[in-house]
Length: 183
Image (tube, rainbow, N blue to C red):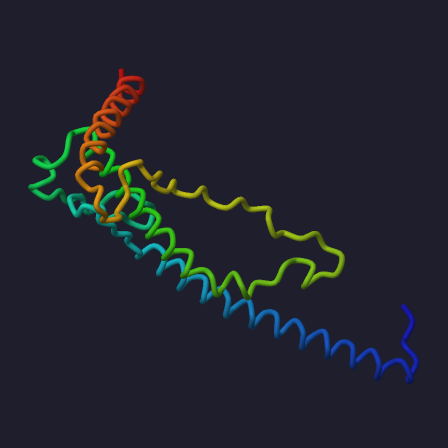
């Protein structure tokens, strides 16, 4: 290897100093991001989701993984609902609680994810890593039923009669789905 000329040496030393400064800055950034990531993970793991059904008969709490940790049924749940409707309400409330927990976990990671550079930002010509990790599946949202109309109008008695007919149809439909799945 040849010794650089005296004119090249200051240029090489300046480049070397700039590279050291860049590496030091990157390492400090990685250290900060690692600490932030650890804090976000702890926060996400500590989250709990909670939801109460629209009718107030069911309350569910889940942990950060969406696993039910508490289920509370109002004493009126057994008097004012059929078993099929109550089971549907429980499932929908569990899903809402899981969405709540997921939303809190996403909020914990959002600031970190926004600051993370993509590989091409650090290494010119490198492939992007964005989109390589698939997003977690969404928790299904509740499908509105035909009787979910909350409007109060003069046709309330007519709607009540229609609602009773629809409820029977819903019960029959849900019962047939239940039998298909569990028979």
